[in-house]
Length: 114
Image 1 (tube, rainbow, N blue to C red):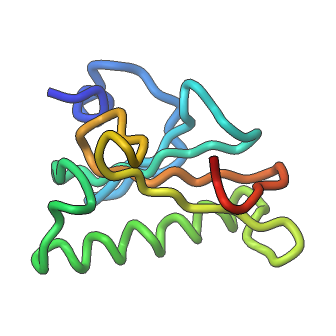
Image 2: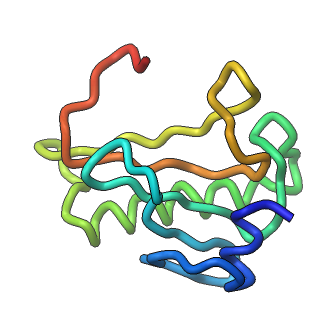
């Protein structure tokens, strides 16, 4: 069981900002920006590279939810902005084998990322 499954099951506490039947979103415990939210589907998909056609609507839901959370946090504008990141595999920076989206905001984010 991953740390995210334990958070979903309420076995580990988290500062939750959103939850619905498909996903949960909470503050990252090791933030890389002043706003760093993790959006995690309740369905376990190890990584984006293992998602399939059956996951299409769930993946869309995650992206739409990220935009709504950004709006609620006041960073969904062209002046402020935010970044969404999905890591896949060791060299992609994956640290937990459960698909999740990082929502980063409230600081200038450089390109290309590190």
